[in-house]
Image 1 (tube, rainbow, N blue to C red):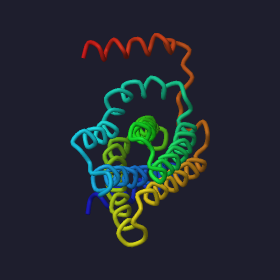
Image 2 (cartoon, helix red, strand yellow; image 1 turned 30 degrees about the vertical axis):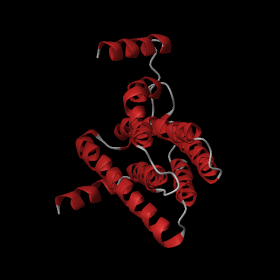
Image 3 (cartoon, rainbow, N blue to C red; image 1 turned 135 degrees about the vertical axis):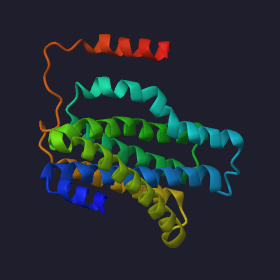
Image 4 (spheres, helix red, strand yellow; image 1 turned 45 degrees about the vertical axis):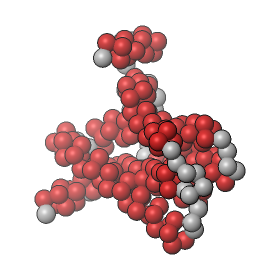
Length: 227
């Protein structure tokens, strides 16, 4: 198959393999966390989910894409991307552990949703950083190929993570908290995988002509308002 041969070519590049490992682990954790969130809100018998609860769960998953996504690029042009992967995944692991404790402690719904929203919000920076870092690990001739294969592989990893979450819940422990902790473990593994990449490898470049952060954020807000 052409896809397999193309992937084989890319996997010869050491730094691409390492960046892909960060993506696969991170997005598989996303899949686990999303299934745990859905199971806790929608399928838990004691929760008796209402339409409002289901809408809240969807907002937790989708709001970061609309509200935080436009600002991710501005900040990623100023933050070392390797560190974004490291600290972003460490933060998500910690927040996922907090979410698991909230599940076990029967915390108020608003507190649970806030914790889950923070996990998915950080995800926007990690995913945007993974795409922005690709040109640093792949030459120009293979960049289009990498841009098509890498996100597809990440989506498959998220699907596999969701399947793993279902399997753990059905076969190992009938507990949403255990599934959330599995996601936390995968986030932690992704953070450790990012340490295999050199700190300055993924950029960004130092650009003396770049506009200030405040001006860039203001321009993004104006763009959102116009949109």
